[in-house]
Image (cartoon, rainbow, N blue to C red; front, side, top):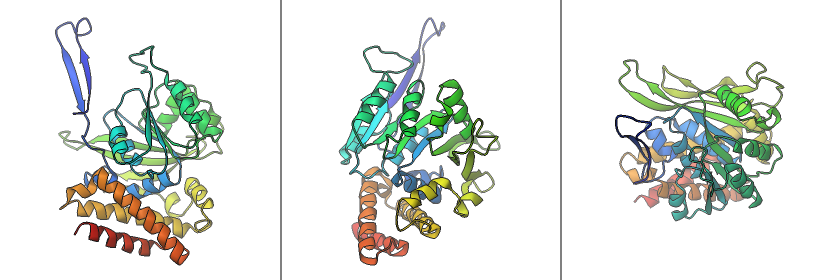
Length: 349
């Protein structure tokens, strides 16, 4: 099994031995699996898939055991295998070996832990600078803990990264991430603004206190106009908010009205989407429909929700999208979904 183990003994534990085993799932988590267990809904999953393809910078925050690393692993599957992926970790938890076995061009860099401080290992900031010298790659940072934050955010600020950048960090809100990164880790305000989005996932309790469950509770974009305090100056704008009553994430008016700066920036770089918010929205909902369909099929065929099939599905989705674009001159969402649905129905016969 893959597991993370913590053990204490004397003198820290004077009366005996204590330990905790944190077991990881044998196969990588996927977005349909998270939909199945209601950590997020299909629209959020489709939105995240769109953001990964849009090469955004994203930090997943949350409390301990809130599912940050597992969710980050599922987003790695949304990266097209044709791109090189560089993963930097001090504790090896992300599904690098599984993705390599699935055909990904993925490289893992093991950095020095700020806890164990093994001097024979390179510090994370040096591993990060090495990753940047390897050229255009998707960059995944296992967790932002210490001085590597300076190098990471500076790289974002100067535009050294031309693909998706994602990582995890402890924090219960977008402002909590700001407070930790700027005040605790010393990242300059101008560098912090280079990040696009903060996704927050937390562990919630049932009213009787007997049950706990994981949920994504917020997705906020970071605007660039503020000077000192993003909370006071409107620097954080929620795109998705959790409704406890409905137990799901809901798009905010900012997102529904097409006023997201991040989405408009993505659209401005794609000829077919520039100035056409409806086309952007249709592509997000198309991805949501695909992921929901995979989840529905998974009720009777569980392997459909696993990583191996997800890679096949994503490849088919992109190839079909390219084919429709060439034939019709536009990314017709209905046509793409119908052709993808024909593909999966044939594969599952």
